Length: 223
Image 1 (cartoon, helix red, strand yellow):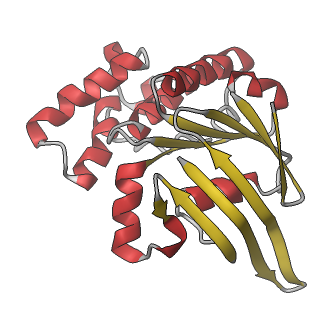
Image 2 (cartoon, one colour):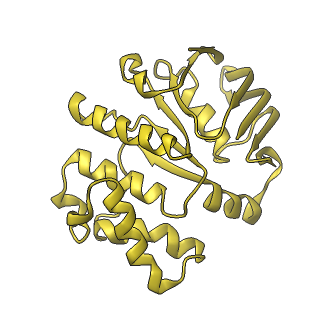
């Protein structure tokens, strides 16, 4: 599902070029759950951003579901991202004036593939999968942190993407809720979705099939 060949990413700083990633080679299969582990600033978020087409490599090639992501630009990249990748963020990024169901429907509205009359029923079905159907019409402010993160995961699944990328999704959650969220990612992978989760907490990586460690821009794979 994800093929990364000799990928490097450098950023220009007043002190010169900073290598966030150095010559990364990585293969991730369909339906795998991968934990990307590393300290803050190690390059793990850069790796996720490159896979998701948010950033571009300085050199090297990235293919996701057979598509050369590093070669896509503009509208073509946006269309590819909308149908291929779902993103989950540490701070949830839910729109506060929209209900849980409306937040989940938002990516459907943007992509405009699901017929309008089918969007709410689909959103409710996805919220049911994450255990929140009863809270569909609540605003984010009426939900706990764990519930908001589950809505964010439901939103990431709105367009049935084959890949879900999550950047520190448990960073604002207590340990028990964090484990519930990781168990949800595990279920998504078991159902066939490729899940890549970045975390600095190695003990939360137990949900994963493999652990990818990033240190000083260098990637190593264990398990």
